[in-house]
Length: 101
Image (cartoon, rainbow, N blue to C red; front, side, top):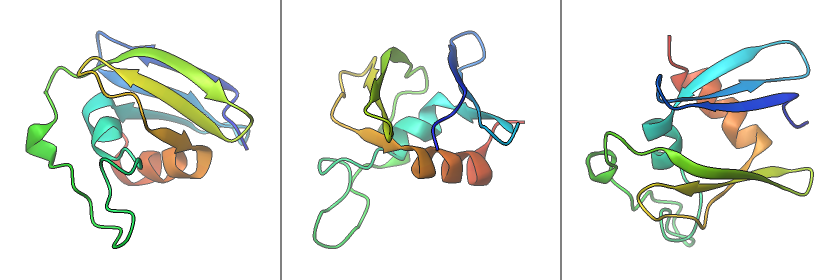
């Protein structure tokens, strides 16, 4: 299920998602960028992550956010990357595992 609210907080460097169950998660931009599920960041055959965390700029931030149907969020990043579609369950997992304090 999609979040009821999505906000990018540039000053705090977090993507804030509020879910229908009332949970609000604050995901660090750098972690979300690192978790990109696209074929350029994850090997399609093995599932191995090709992107290294140390290659993601510390100041990476979304330049735009857009809904893709009712199932995902498309994020254009300041490092030029824009091919990842973040399914809601992926974002929820990131929030559960890596939410900013």
